[in-house]
Length: 146
Image (cartoon, rainbow, N blue to C red; front, side):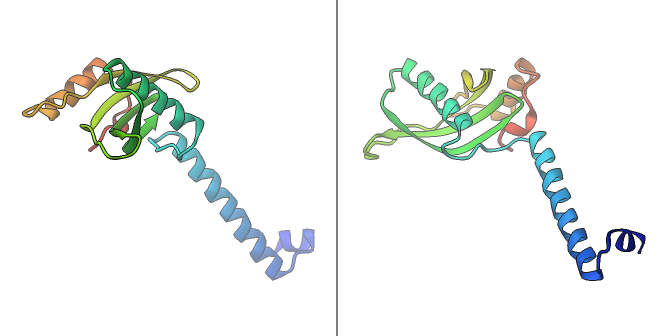
């Protein structure tokens, strides 16, 4: 009751104050938690656009240019990203083999694709991810598909 008396708050004002304080605290804590976990950047964000540009460059080096990338999976954490793309022609008539790969941010919004995941039939993906994590030990495990 001391706070109510010192600040002249009625019971309903005090209730509103506590509700707003709880809400603000929850939002701040949720924001802090999301910084330390994998996230999917929103469509149109500078981060997602930079990752897609790096992926487009890697595909262009394979001779695959002017593609639209459908992104069913993208997780980013601490300058590392795992992406899966389903490339298709600009008109959407031709669809190409899905590809997944590991990217690293070299500078702010300057990403490089480090390697593509093998797509050959019979690939032991458990072994692949174990080796990938050994080769890139600083890549956070929560970016990889489970």
